[in-house]
Amino acid sequence: MEVSLVAAAGRTKARRANLSGDSVRLALLDAFELVCDGRRVALPLSAQRLIAFLALRRRPVQRPHAAGSLWANASERRACASLRSALWRLRHADYSLVEADGQRLCLSTSVRVDLHEAEAQAKRVLESAGESSIALDLAALRGELLPDWYDDWVLMEREYFRQLRLRALEVACDRFTRAGRLDEALSTGLAALECEPLRESAHRALIRVHLAQGNFAEAIRQFGLCRSLLRARVGVEPSDLMLELMREVTNRQRLGDVAPLV
Image (cartoon, one colour):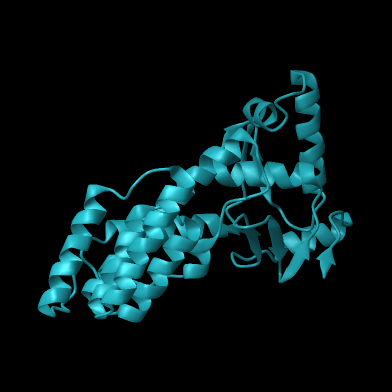
């Protein structure tokens, strides 16, 4: 069920008075979606872009900077007018989504953003070196930031999150492998490959999982898949790191060694 953007003044005040920290969620992964009290809120595109821009900036921004970034092809006067229009629409929504302090704008602290939560999860994995008792929400780390949006301010953040989640997935995969949590290691390694099939380090992490399971044939098959993808899509051969790993696979297969290789 969608919630109308514009509300009567009395109802707006009542909703804002009852606003809780968990009542407003903003999704930026895979698609834009704003959910208030369990109901999807329909916003015009200009308001969506402003909300997303402030969420990605993570700190207050000056109004002229927001206007120039969001309406880069318009004149300064037209861009500022478009910003005022978007803010007017948001002020008449049932929830306070944007906080304004003079010339500064920021996303309300009451809005929970899925991207921020996914980034925090990935950073916890990368910063907790050596810990095997990590927990992952693979669904969050599989998401891509606003894939149908092509603004420069989105593209830079999309690439940052892409690299962050891939590093976190690979690190978690190796830690799960070392800890003997092989089912979780396999799921995490596959999630990394789903995000980027051409990433050789993700293939290597998955090969180490197969070796820990004693599945030499799967490890060799994974190497063949990696080599075929790199040749067909990029025109390159696997790196020396991959070739060295496969030499160890051959040696261990010959010796019957099935201990984890990480």
